[in-house]
Image (cartoon, rainbow, N blue to C red; front, top):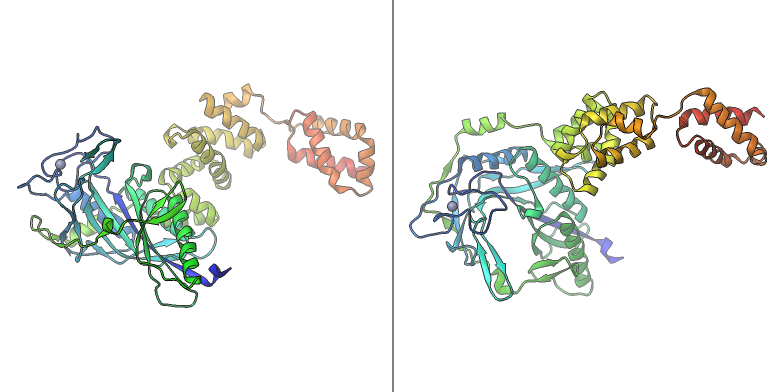
Amino acid sequence: MAIDAYEAVIGLEVHTHLLTRSKLFCGCAASFGAGPNENVCPVCMGMPGVLPVLNRYAVELALRMALAAHSEVQSYSVFARKSYFYPDLPKGYQISQYELPLCKGGYIEIGNGGGASRQIRLVRIHMEEDAGKNIHEADSSLVDFNRSGVPLVEIVSEPDIRSADEAGAYLRELRAILRYVGASEGRMEEGNFRCDVNVSVRRKGSSELGTKTEIKNLNSFRFVEKAIAYEVARQVEILEAGGRIAQETHLWDPIREETRPMRSKEFANDYRYFPEPDLPPLRLEAEMIEQVRASMPELPAQRRERFQREFGLGTYEAIILTEDREIADYFEQVIAEGVKPKTAANWIMTEVLRKLNETRKPLSEAVQPAQYGVLLKKVEDGTISLSAAKTANTAMWESGKDAMTIITEMGLIQISDEAAIAAACDKIIAAEASKVAEYRSGRDKLFGFFVGQVMKAMGGKGNPKMVNEVLRQRLAGG
Ligand SMILES: [Zn+2]
């Protein structure tokens, strides 16, 4: 296939809301979910004669993100006006940063679940305000300015990404970092983590850049991955047919699963940037940067490394368990109950994440770590089997009852009494004489059949390890 002869060159621009209580340049609440136009004032409505005042905490959050991304914080940066007209931007310009951004360079490290990790370099991180939101109805259009002036950081990567999978890994790592440092909630479904993608392709081995297209405003990891895969295939097809790629801005259509170009006048990029005359340049004292640095929490990459070193987890397990800071805390709480790290890791990665997904509940409403402490230690000491623990888990989620009550009520304690197991084995061996003869003449595969029969006879409660041992002895005994 011709597509194998090409490689994709991908750069991402991520916009994410900073987790402040008030907006970037006024005291209005920056929260999501208020009624239309409840969180507005003359400043964020763009009335004439008002003056913006910079939110210091927003700067601190942007700095946390920058330090976590190894980005170079600039002691002198400048806000700029980016002029364009849109009904949800009443001033006629957005306050952003252009020539002199808050931070330059840096990188995000992505692992691919086993292989070597890779650094995706950053061009810059800068601050800007969000615009409002247009709502189009059947016979009219409405504007909600609640989002107008909410602080954003824009994180721009170098075109270092080579596949849709790497783009997904980069975004997941970026979101994990933002959440760990408390800079953003990174909730795509609320539109506070959005992504623009630049994609071009070139023949493998070439160092020249092809003509790129931009795909705007993707709001889910899955859409980003699908849009990239679609766009790469589309570009390769055009080039293979001898055509040329047009430099265009595209939109992703999630229903038809294809990208299509926006009308050219929708992206006439003449923003006429100039320094914002109402705000002084932003000067950062070294002391402030050092204070922020000193307050930085453990980052996802550090926690991954520690989980592998301290708990003997594999790379993949460490990635899954550290992606979300709360899940990582939860894992450590289960271990603190005396459960072996390997047992806790397997349990959370399968049972807990599945239940959270099925029930759509937040982790705070999940079964508490202390309960899993009780349940999993019963598995480790052989009192109950792993499959019985899974049965108990479903009941614990449904009823909210504690682990011991469920184990007792459902009669899940497994039988480890040697005499009882031996009796069950003997009974099956006596009843299945012809199968025993076949097994003894070399049909080893039948062993599983005998195990199944014994477990069935014991109502699924026989200690599987002991059943195996006793059966092996008896069947070999002749
Ligand atoms: Zn306001």
